[in-house]
Structures are given as structure tokens and as C-alpha cells.
Length: 226
Image (tube, rainbow, N blue to C red):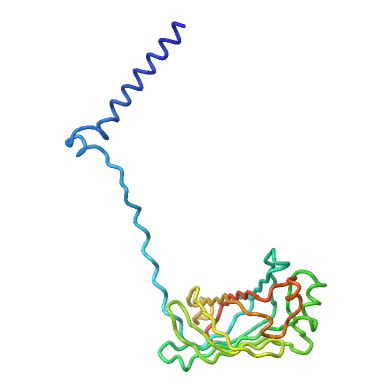
């Protein structure tokens, strides 16, 4: 018992000394407060926002080796499923000073659809979906190109499954540089947008909610100066 009481007394003395040392910073006089450390209530300065790079100009070709075309669709109204196309190409000309001189063309081989399942890929190539034997190409041709901060806003005709619809998408510039091998300009472009497959008479599974009507397209491109 004696040892326990001594331990408690020592602990109390130490705690008291500690509190006495800290207390002036919070409860002392104005003079004490003037020299006591102050807690900052302001947020740390946020890094300066990066200014959007000026859109690239000139003629470019899509580099399919360093580009991707991904699509996503809701399955059974519970999960997002993703696939890709393996063969595609295109050309782009950008002129920020004269937007009317700008143009974008892009094409996808419908039969190159790839979901890592041969049976499903065969179904997607069938008349239930792309009908790739009859409509071999998915294509986009611009009708209007407008510069915007960090890229271009592009309106044009999307043709798929034999149907053409006008769409507008933002083609965002993800980077720009000079190819050290060729000495020509290179740039990165990306578009992320949604289309309804019912607009293109691709109706399989929509009514049963097996597959959603809306399809998300993510197109990431590296383009090389021509």
C-alpha cells in the first residue's frame, strides 16, 4: 500500500508540473499570450492551380500502339462491365486561330471487339449487336471543331450499325511534347462520353434489363505530328 501511495503522489506531482508548464499558453496574461505558441486555424495554402495548356495545332495521326478504345456497360443493372476494341485509327487537324480549318476523323474495326471471352465476342459481332459482317466499321467525322481550355469541343457524325447520329464530345488534351526520335510534335487526347445504343438500333437485352442502353466510351489517344 505504501508503495502504491508513493507512486500516486509522484505521478500527481509530475502531472501538476506538466499542467503548470502548459497552462500559461492558454490561460496566462496578455503578455504570456503574446509569446506563447499560437495554433493556426487557417488552412495550408493550396498549390496554385495549373493553367490549362494551350491546345495543340497542326496535323496529326493516331498512334494505335499507344492508344486505347474502351467501352463500359451496365450488366443486369448491378455491375459495370468493360471491354475494348483492338483495331482503330484516325487523323486530326487542329487550328486554334481558324477553327473552321480543324477536322477529326476516327474509325474502329467493329470485328476487333474484345471482352476476353470468345463466345461473348462472337455474340457481339453478330446481328444482335454490331453485325460486323455487314457493318464492318464504326466511324466518326467532325462537322465542327471549337477550341476550349485544355482541348477542343468536337461535334460530328457517329456512324455505327448502319445508323448515323450527331454527337458532341470534349477532346481533352492530356499532354504535349516533341518526339525525340522524329523531332515532330506529339500530344495526348482523351474523350469520355456516353451514347445510347438504342439510337443505333442495337436493342438486344435492353427491355429485359440484361444490358443497359447507355454505353460509356473512353478513348485515350496518342497523336503524332504528320
